[in-house]
View 1 (cartoon, rainbow, N blue to C red):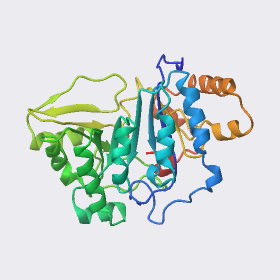
View 2: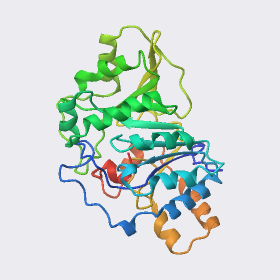
View 3: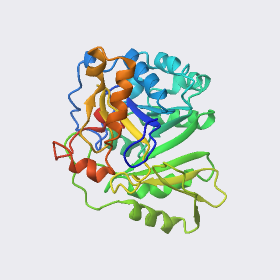
Length: 328
């Protein structure tokens, strides 16, 4: 029921529940943080629930909740409880930095959360502090260990950063040998609140894969899943998998099935556009469910062919938002 002009069915919503975060990752925001919005400007949980319910009636059956860091928002677990009653949703997943969620893992299992994407860019304590500008390595690794033992499907999101963590690519692949996890290497993107940071080398999909091949000459490409954001692989006899997300080179747009909502309710057809309309303002002006459905249907018809077209059509030609604002 949600289809764009290129025939792509849209069934996946990424929603940021907050722009606040307890880390200050250098590729995500400047060291001083970002100008967080007043709480009344954020979508309320009631408004978020309504938007998800309406979209689920239009065929959206996968929801990923992000931030900022979703677990810094008060009563996030109660919001998850309410979402669990929406029987149109096949998957509810969460992206988190992991520092706060350990006490909630049993509840997440009970609620049937499909997967946790854990953002973890290094396995080294001092480097973690360098990347995140916070000393929360022990808490994050404790969460990692608990998630490995849980029933939750676990993915590691590793942003590959020139001059920072490229020497650890093989270490992350090594984790997949004996653990049922999916490691996803992500090309660094220009969403740190100031524009793309200066880098010494271009670590794109090809270079990441070549680096892996030097340490692991024998691995298998996995069959491509429709709408997958990553090209996936598996070492011989490994329990887990690894993949590469070409987020910046944007070679995964042809069968994109995703839309985004920022924490303030700004609707984005594409990560690289600068926002299409404010669903928050539309709701607060008294829009009915049918009106909300109509505006989503009409707007998704205008979804750009790919991220390059989306970026080209921006009013502000400089990509300078923070991923904490957009929703990681």
